[in-house]
Length: 118
Image 1 (cartoon, rainbow, N blue to C red):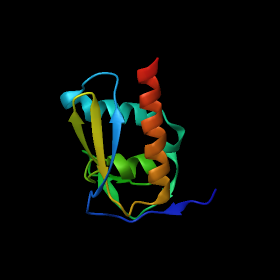
Image 2 (tube, rainbow, N blue to C red):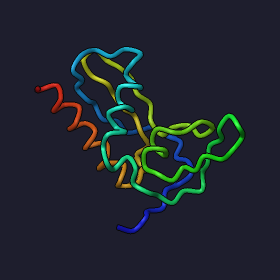
Image 3 (cartoon, rainbow, N blue to C red):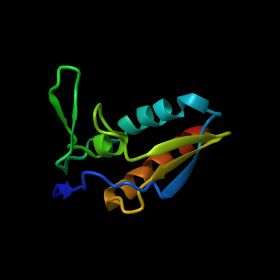
């Protein structure tokens, strides 16, 4: 599979997906979704992106995976906003996101919603 080019920044979080969660999450929604997302193999899909974050020692952190681009790294903000709503979370993201993001979010939604059925 060829490495896909990703833009450094997309500003409008104008698309959303609603995910049914096993219980109301409140302030823990972001951490919960990120932990589940990290377990999905495509989280580590390599991408080409010129963006970088910066760690505490002022070393660059490459934004070179789908997960880093979507969830962010220190010094590079995420491309999502997670809003808890009762037993759901609404995940807002840029409408012009690369197709890999759409597929990943669909997989994330299915993974979480399947866990609510068990």
